[in-house]
Length: 204
Length: 221
Image (cartoon, rainbow over the protein chains, first blue to last red):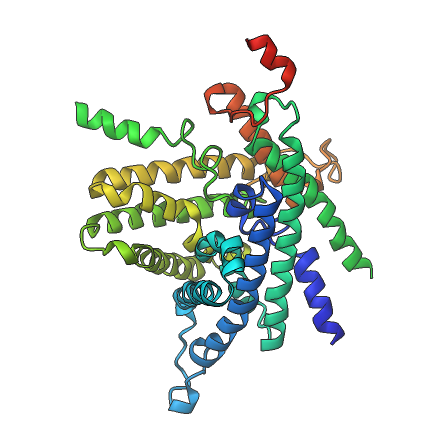
């Protein structure tokens, strides 16, 4: 139990997706101008990562992993090179289904962050969650926790950045630094802050 | 020749004026993650340029046969297949670099640069200009990666391509490595400063101010 909690914390803070691993930066920077949009994105990310990582784990271990077809008399069959296409397909389908479910049963939620859902199909952080799951060979429970933790970490980072940037809209910045430039510098400073979590994990 | 100069313009436009990383905010994730050394940055640049050019050529060739409604899925599948090929080649011939790049080669699939170019350009143009445009964008991306990768390796380790350039203090030289350069924050800072430098050089790229202070508004009137 404590292991899972540790994994959650490390996925959320020590290996923070946008700030430490540079994943999902395109949406991270594009949608962090306002706190509300950032919150919607963060919630959508958490939901999609929490669903797709365990789902991909099931598919990988049942169909693609080396030796998965041993029961059918084909123990040498190794389909793991197809993982990329399979994961993308699963993610696209999961996002589509999630959107339809939300639209049907929770229209308010869908209206609040529905616009971000289709974007998440091509979000590198989502795909990376599944790829890390394979690379680090997590179990099913671990991959669910890892997906949720990464999503929460992304949400925290994007909301923080959104809050700082909405304040900075009134600051008098040099012309060349406005917008993208300052967003990178801010992300760098936040990344320094999150790097200290790695120190805490190393000493504890 | 008019045709040739047009291709030249399509090719050189994305290098600085329309640079995919510093202006269009496309493909940043991989641009930062793989730049701790010049060798990984270069491998990533080459892989991305190859995938981008081939994907643009393929999608542009079959652009009239892709149904509008499922075009994104078709594009992603084409890109993913190309990425698998590149990944297998890297694993077979450059095992060490492939391990250093970890999952980021696979992430070329979802690199917004690839889908952005196929969606915005290759879908509406014949194969040759589409591939030229993709190649130009690949070069623009590579330029940024190589600059940042070079700076980080030079100041972080005093090396370029693993060869010693600045003599290290530990070995009797004068240079003390900045270990911050090898950590995540420095990549953000360097890219931020690079964006700033490009926009000072070309002021037309600067973004409009969201809010004009009252004092200046009166002065303008």
